[in-house]
Image (tube, rainbow, N blue to C red; front, side, top):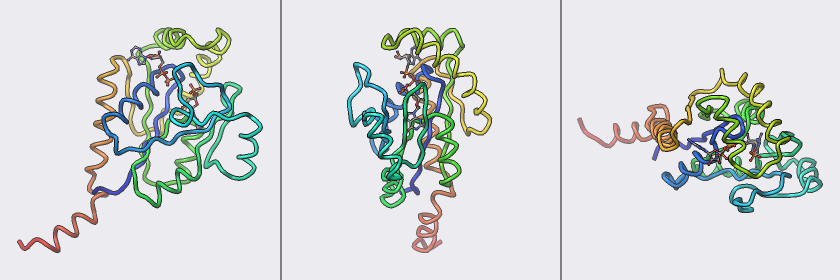
Length: 204
Ligand code: ADP
Ligand code: 5GP
């Protein structure tokens, strides 16, 4: 089996990142999702422990003090953080891991861990981004505007990502992410052990 891999997916809010990531996990159930912690309230369709661990701001702060996050940020007035335990178990268990996090957190992960693949999802246009934010139908106009404005600074980070996916048609975007994952699993550098084993066991 190819050496383990973690994928980090970022996007401006509303670009469709969660939709794409959920489909990737359905198509490739061998990938584990890094369930982040957040102090924001759940949306109607979200499940605690699956989409996020929803906790209070106070509990989040306690967990920061206890060093439980490998990275965390304040975003749109809420706290978001990736579990250090999940990252440790990725290193020890070797199961592939998907992180759905914004660029500041992604950058911290890149500084701390080698070998990740970084994917940035873009909407087809700014107008469509706004339409999708509004279409989600679960945030106030103020929050929607805030998220839309934040896209500007997030876009500046795009230069250091490995892959870009334009999420115009959802199915095409999912196929692209699945292809990126599968191609990464075939990289020679991830298969060194298997290649050596093959060479030592196979008489030419
Ligand atoms: P993000 O996780 O990037 O904030 P979501 O996955 O929540 O974005 O998507 C935002 C909204 O856009 C949702 O209502 C979702 O159903 C919709 N959406 C996602 N991808 C597409 C697409 N390719 N075409 C049209 N609508 C989409
Ligand atoms: P949302 O509130 O729309 O679910 O998420 C807002 C933003 O926070 C998204 O860009 C999402 O990727 C990001 N996010 C979710 N979890 C984490 C996390 O653990 N760390 C960081 N840095 N960002 C996160």
